[in-house]
Image (cartoon, rainbow, N blue to C red; front, side):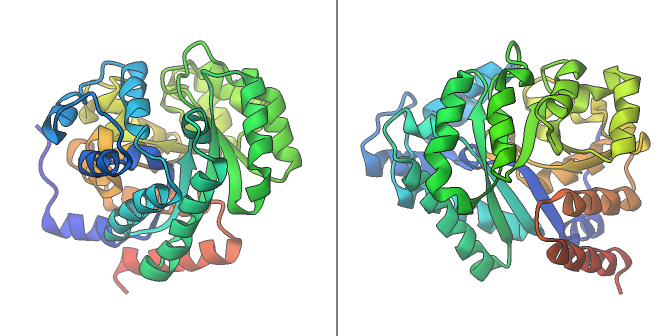
Length: 342
């Protein structure tokens, strides 16, 4: 049985400065906030109460989660909604020791309902600026394309977002992985590269190791989101280790979506032992049972991990961020202090 982390370990993990690089901001919409926004915006809900909604969070795969995730996002209508959503996340991030957050957002989830692109980006951007002032958190936005939709729709979404190009640091690829290989989006990622945007992609969660390879080879992804199935291909593991390609792993999400039966079965120790640049993230924390520190604590309670591993995980997250080099170096210096207690 996993043993609860000691107070000293909890404090140590909390104090480590860390980056969160795999966080879907719509997935931080807690049931209480969801109901409040539904009431404010006059949006009918399928569940009668917060408790009934939480009880529905029993997912058997990625698609069963996405069905309820998209329904929940329907309450987000205005610029203020998106700002409040992100500020609620940033408050939790600050408590978890996060110094850098790169937020994924899915504009297609909202524009298809008639929500203006500007309302989404302006609301989230304002929250990023407020997070810097209020919490000392550096934050930026990564626009994600829904892979179950067409590439033509993704291309149009990117073009529609160009008036807010200065608010974006990158693009990503999320939603249903099975049956939607990365190469389906080769042209839109090429266009993003022409625009100077960073590129990341979900691969190797439900999809096979080949999806990780095509994300690297076709999309030129700089980070792989999830990537846990890379261990099915020793050659791919060697490639990822040699290149230092970051993997943004989400342990509680992996368990909730049945990628692993429990945290004790997670392959995080094997990823670290192979020299992979793995870091921890919360993915969709309102749906998967915890924010970033919850993921850290769960892993350190269930898996044979050391304090040195914790420092490595934190260092990997900071080094893998798209923040300016000077900011990264400052955080790494803070990490050295936190790790040694000096």
